[in-house]
Length: 442
Image 1 (spheres, rainbow, N blue to C red):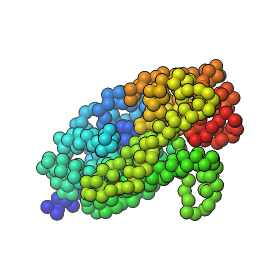
Image 2 (cartoon, rainbow, N blue to C red):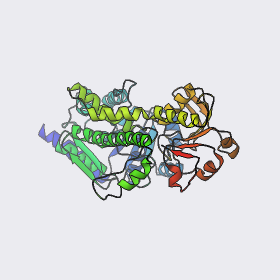
Image 3 (tube, rainbow, N blue to C red):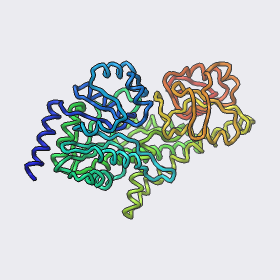
Image 4 (cartoon, rainbow, N blue to C red):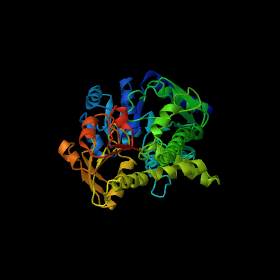
């Protein structure tokens, strides 16, 4: 038995070092696609496995659907002959390294939805063979790798650390970030044994400058959750602080700028219209859910989540107050929403607070228009809207311009000049050195 274990480890190690290992990335979204392309760039043969026929078709033609990755890059990599995109699960059985990057959304009741992980594990089990390493990257609650993936795979009759290796490595992709990408963000990985962790580190060290090993999959799982718990708590704090400053008649943005001049003991976080994306709204909730399962209450996480969930409603309330001060009612008013993605310069609508704001405004019977350079149509969460053109004539007709997302490629000077009233939830006007009595900040 020991001899077999050694041979599996040594054979995998040899293949990874020589770049003969075939890598398959399961799930080609914001996390999976960049990973797949980077491994191809380093000389590996990579399969991209995704059940979304539209993604497979686009990538097969060398077309990208992700902002951070231009189509010319995909086309160039396709020409190497080392990147194959498919819906056929049989590629898994011929792979040496399998990296799982499937979605893990929250259910409406704020509990983890690991259905995509379960489906991926069943597909893997059908195609599992000896001599593979499987790495889960999908953010999830602590214990998923051990309690869900491992038992599923071992139903194949193969044994972990004997026939195959299993590890967890949390994704750290930040869409739209031009400074940090997959290759220069340190990677954390944890397996069930030192050999499993070492093999995982060896895999990622081909494409990432720094790879950090931890002693278990659970440690790696919770590392990701701590990172985003830190963020949700601090964002919740500053969102609450912003509401307090509004009541006190103090500019919260000026206060933050002043506070961050302190060279220690302070890290600036900024208020906004709410939190979005996959990570911050969802990840801490995985931890909160798991904590309840073991009889522990995560008071700070739950309170921060509630504060942040309440922000879109507060934005609508403030919009009503601003209109009322001008003798207008919210119902029937003309409101123009600028930006609907969850963060600037990305085409990602996941958990975007703009959708909640728009939904609430439509319930108030406002005459709503929106513009976003990345989203020409909105057809989600019961909202069906077509983006309007950003023109002087249109702006002059609006009762309120509501800035939700501060995209870079927008003519803010023209918006300031042609608009009668602007509610800026991102302080983008000041950052663009635009001073106007028509601008009201969050």
